[in-house]
Amino acid sequence: MSIITNLTRTWLTRSPKPFIFKNEYDEKLPFEPCENLGLYVHIPFCKSICNFCPYCKTLYSEEAMNRYIDALLREIRLVGEGHAEKKRVTSLYFGGGTPALAAGRMKELICELEKYFIITEGVGAELHPDNVNVQTLKTLKEAGVTKLSIGIQSFQEKYQSILGRKSVDVRAMSAALAEVSFETVSMDFIFALPEQTIDDLTSDIETAFANGANHIAIYPFIDFTFTKSRVRAMGNKQKHALLDKVTAYCAEKGYSRGTIWTFSREPHAGYSSMTRDNFLGFGCSATTLLREQFKINTFSVEEYIGRINAGKLPTSLTIRFTPRQRMLYYLFWTAYSTRVDPKDFEKFFGMQLKKMYGTELRLAKLLGFVKEENGVFVMTPKGAFYYHYYENFYTLAYIDKMWGIMRREAFPKEIRL
Image 1 (spheres, rainbow, N blue to C red):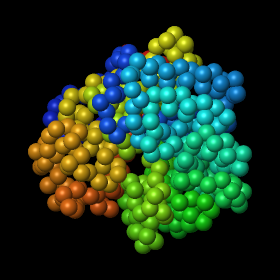
Image 2 (tube, rainbow, N blue to C red):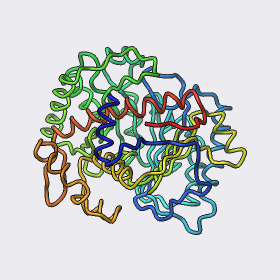
Image 3 (cartoon, one colour):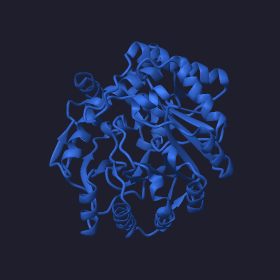
């Protein structure tokens, strides 16, 4: 897999140079000139640890979480202070972990961020199904949260068992969501589980929409090497067929496709913390993407708190992009939305997309991966599958390696990918 990703990277960046992440960072992050800037805050605490989950998380205790939230507030100040004016940002997302465990301090965090940023498109937060109760929802809404993402994974008992999850009380969840309304209620599901069928997935989709959701996300199962999961991923041929059936089903039902993995029942409903040109990340393992750099915070909660208490940013690694590397990163994540607008590319880089990647775009059209509509490149269902196929390679060759190292070392000297 690393051969495929390395060859693709070499071709698209026009250089054999690897992605080099070094143990360094800027004391003052240069985010002022960045447009379409988003915010992300990571809350790593969970009441129990799911064995399939690759994200940075740790077991919850009230004392540990409060120390962590105190450090988060200081990190926000470290990043925000010294900038003359408030910066307009698109959105704010709380991920984890289980951010709803910090519901009681969410308003405090949002108010601190609003000292330095003007949030224009709302605030999202991830929830475990156990968190979907009236009291927690009211606390989140009063804090300023406007969008929810509930990690269902599956309503099917056979898959809940495989994933080590307990069954969801659908009736109680639905009642709570009916009592406390939000702009977007998204429910997350995993597809490509062993022997999973289109009937399994359509049942999950309709159960979600019938019980408070107006948006769904269907993410592929990826078998990370450092997790303890024993679930075997579905073969690519079966996965391709299943993804095509899900896409066709949602189209037939009139559900709008927002990104590769998301569909909505209502036009205004949207939830994605990924499709941003630039973003600032706060908390352990959080990443920051700016015009010329990408940085990632330490995965260690204790080392994170220690760095913040010493008055330093908790950055573990930083990559300084070459222009072509930044273009590749931009295109990869912009394509996640299933659309790439050459005008946006030219505005961001000051160069024409077809001049930089004309050959690749012609090949993508010839292979049926994209079509051109009014000057915008739109991904086809075939292209969506191969995007997933490459993302799977990318994840296992790059992210799996990096996260595996960072889970063992708080501040690695250097990582080459």
